[in-house]
Length: 295
Image 1 (cartoon, rainbow, N blue to C red):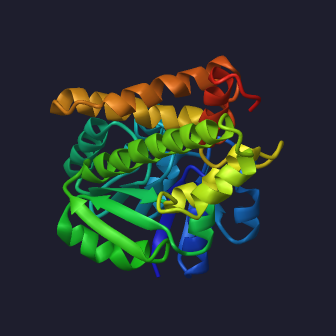
Image 2 (tube, rainbow, N blue to C red):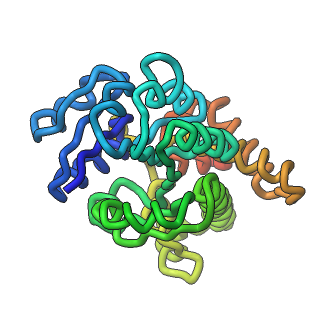
């Protein structure tokens, strides 16, 4: 059993921490908002007052935070991870951020005598809770093999895709596909609805057709309405953050991204009509308004 730390105890990070605890590992955690950690503390997680304290007291530090800026905030400065990092330690970042920043952080970890992996996830809260989450890992192959049993406590499918930064590149590739799928599904529902087919009927037919990917199966029904007050797993702003990362990669790598660019503008429109805090499936509401249909 390993001595682990986790920074970022939000919707996904808190649940990943709980799975690691349930597997028998010792956990120390930190979040900007301590109230997010109360249930985990009651379950036996130790609390740390800073990312630095976590890094000083554990062997492997995990993090899962919102964006590139948040990763820079928890890793840098006198209270950051690298201030408490040292020889033999491992940092595993599960955030979806700029791959260039991840590679820079990996270089810092090695300079301090430790190592780093980027470990992104594919799946939702329900996938994680059911123990079906899949993960993509970037970094040294030997380190990956050593830590693999710990990662498999989080989810059963763990694939090393290459060196540092490549797991994030793969996750961005996955997410741009998810967003484009959601837009295409929304267009299909709306064209059926404006042809006279009831929305629910159109959704039912599409969910039982060949286009029904796992993501469409669990998000598709949300075009019929998202429950007010329901916990949002991945909102429109978070998806657009990944779209912008994808567009940057496309420019850097000379890959044209026409569908990603168009989809990105629709997520901007989500903010315009005030649905950006809803799940990313709310892009349907933008297209409905544009179609003259009540969302």
